[in-house]
Length: 542
Image (cartoon, rainbow, N blue to C red; front, side, top):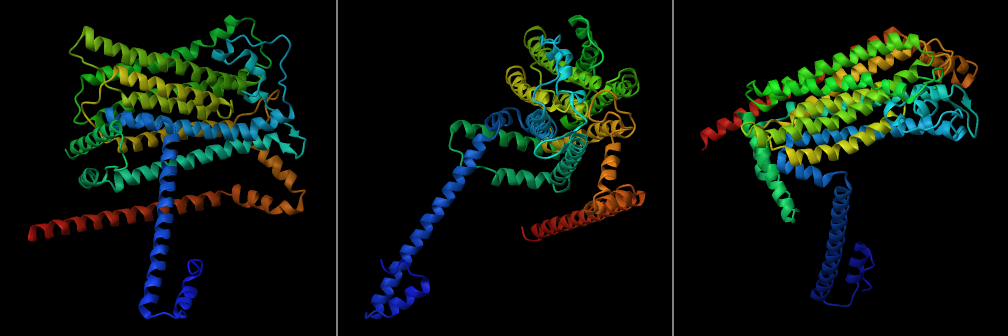
């Protein structure tokens, strides 16, 4: 016992000094070493069990983990890709809401916690649909934010906070989308190999920690569907305009109603036409539907943005809030039509296919149409981030409800797909579509608004400026009076406003892309040569 607390070197010396025979000393040393090994082994087992418990707890607490496994096991990974994409967008909007609420809304609420609502304005409930009335005088829209520097424990410039929060958020969204798209493309296109992936899934992908019988069945179904996939592949807008009645507010729902009706009916016709078209794989069928729906939704958004930027911006004194209200109504009505789409597109199709026209059969889940609906909804949120900073909060509630709505509709009304496609590559296409043209289009609209359009003179944080971007120039002029900030002024004047800087950045990016492309091509050739060598060896030595 006295030797256990000693270090290894001191223990050897102490045993060597004992007045015992060599065999007795050897036995003592062996006993102590055995105890030490047992102690180390015990500690390792404790650490491993703690790590396994933490991982299990994390998986248990992960949002919708069990539901995802159930969907993947029953309907396959192609349908699962829709729900994974929906969850990904939900996390995106949570991040957006935290950024905007933390850096724009909270400082204003701390400075002025009570909204400036006129006595004759009250909440009637219709505002939930129209976004007008009571919401006009809150921080929901652009017009509810001040252009002053909030004086408190620290001076907080609302103009700079509003501008840089929106700008940094859009940049972070773009970077996240680019990295996600690049990572997905690398895994599912560059390094993907159907044959080797099938062998890996068959021989090495079973999770031996699964003990629950239901989980085992789900995992077996999921693995069977994945192998089948690979086999197939081898083969304050109205601060100056007051509504007279609730009827006038209700009239504002006409445009979003027509737009959402088009987004509901036209894709259903696309899906109907698709039944009479013949495709060699589910992937090609989905891509055809995606192209048609992208053209439809981009056309609708282009017409709406042209109207907002050219008509609304000149007609109303607080036009930013008017655009924010229009986007709010589009988001709300789009959600209502998504629920109607689940009813008409899936429930009624199930009733017709099982009772009236049995030859049609039970419908399948239309992955392409549903994913495009998510991308369209997210594009509205990106465009509206400038005009309604709290619009992501509506999106969070919308996506959360939509997940359970689609899950119930899927399990009750749809059958597993009869033809399978590569879900991982479909996920890559979804992210690519989300980035271009939708995110790039939304970013262009926000940039055009900040760079070219004149802000309202009666409301909002940028009132009195020639354009939104002028706030940076005003800030730089203020920094010129501070000697310690001259380096910021120099960077802005000689780097940010220099065309040569952006030319060099573009050139460097092109060179880097070319280098990585050449490296990728070289690795592809090397992999092909190694595979051919393996084939040659297997032929010579069967």
